Image (cartoon, rainbow over the protein chains, first blue to last red):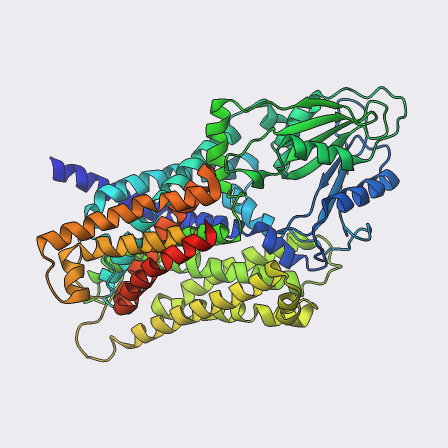
Amino acid sequence: MKDGFRQAMAWLHTWVGLIFGWLLFAIFLTGTLSYFKDEITHWMQPEVQVHGVDDARSLAVAQAYLERQAPTAARWFITLPDSRDPGLSVMWQDKVDPGKRGNFIQKVLDPVSGQPVQVRESMGGEFFYRFHFQLQMPHPWGRWLSTFAAMVMFVALITGIITHKKIFKDFFTFRPRKGQRSWLDGHNAVGVLVLPFHLMITYSSLVIFMSMVMPAPIMASYGDDTRAFFSEVFPATDNAPALGQPGKLLPLGPMYAQARQQWAGGHVGRVAVNNPGDVNASVNVFRAGSDSVVHDFGSIVSFNGTTGEQVRVSGEPSLPAVIGGSFYGLHMGHFAGPVLRWLYFICGLAGTAMIGTGLVIWLGKRQLKHVKSGVMPFELKLVEVLNIASMSGLIIAIAAFFWANRLLPVSVAERSAWEVQVFFIAWGLSLLHAMLRRGRQGWVEQLGVGALLFVAVPLLNAITTSEHLGVSLARGDWAMAGFDLTCLGSGMFLAWAAWKMQRRAALPSKAEGVPSLKLKPEAH
Amino acid sequence: MLVALLMCYAGFTALCLSTDRHHGELLHSKPSPRRRLGLRAAGWLLLTVSIWPAVVIAGWGQGLVQWCAVLMLSALLLVLLLPYRPRLAMNLAGIGLLACPVAAVATL
């Protein structure tokens, strides 16, 4: 009876893991990259210069610019630069008739000169972030699919714990260079050692999606927009309505200081001004998400814009909001400093590796049965092609995305859309290649191409911009330098992987001993 | 975070040595029952106590998250080092334990 149960769980783990493994691999890898969303965006828009963070100066500069450019706008949004994202971003919404929503116009300002920076059009890290839960699909479908994938991931984790019962006994066991055995060891090791992270990230994604896919009124009216912060802006709408009489907006600096005082020195993420030219102007100061582990969606201090009087301070969040907010906060990791952010990144890579090794094991075990005849059935060929394209193909696509960012001319129409196109074209090509060159040869070639593309990223950056490693390191621009160095490191890792594959491929042809693939099929 | 990392790593190494297989691989002998018990107790103690420096430095919210991260990655580091550089893996634990008080004085 007990064995029957475990077998059922193993069956579920095997098949659910296979069917959704390819998709989950992509979600995990792009989600992991999203931990460095701002840094990636910084690299992809090198025109934005890094200055020392000075919020008072930035606010004054932004206010002066907006008063010149958009005195009659319905709303202003000012996002202050921080150590991760050096751009001072301002956005305003045109005033239109009631009932309609005006267009949003966004500019990135230089926080010192106050002039708009001519940045190349690019989605930057936002692309990976969007992709990991929208999957580049029309609105509700991508979110539904990724929610479903998250549920499947949760099922795969639970069944995995039951199936690989020995993971806790073999806690410290990893035996390399033993073919299939090593893959299973690796799968178990990254699975069990980073299990708290896997459970947290999967469960919290379900909690986040719960409110996203529910037909809540916020989502019904704002769902199609790609900016998540509309939901954050939502509480701001109960500010006083415009009276239609012109008024003079006070400087935002003192309100900013007062809000920080209210939060005992907490940081400001964004400042929103409603009806800036009106006598009834209102100012909402939003707290930065990086201040605490528990994400608070509505931590706001509101002011009357023309008198400077503090109107409202949002209260303590309710208990459900704290619980929901802590899952959200843990998943996003906005609060993480550089070291913790890297640890998050490594955990994410471990999750990706767990999925990848699982896919390899599925195929490896079944291929063993056909080694003698040398003929693979169609379904195994299909899985092999999809394995190659979904793993090494995705890596190539990511590299191609970065290359496109540097090589596409700045003046191309719909430039950021083209970058995304290049990503998918590269992925599609790798699928074609995997169909033509199957097996280890496919792996070696794709990993090799990925390695080349990544290793050359710092070089590409040096040729096409003035932000090469010598400059960025000397100036202490760690986001820029870190990106280059991480690409270099990833490229070298891929080269090592390709080399290992190549060597392994050469082995069985030498009639020497047991090919490393043929090892005792393990209970799985 | 450093103190917690060193303590977690040493704790996992002790737990690892308390198993017959790994004790045999690393020290080429079978641990006596008393030694096994002692290692296990020391390991669990180190892992539990390592919460304290993390929370003291970073507060409950951040501290617990940091502790979890450090817990997972110290184990991952140990497991990846063991098959390739067993001696280094062991020495690191020893050095870590020795460096613990120094790091504690420097950061706490």
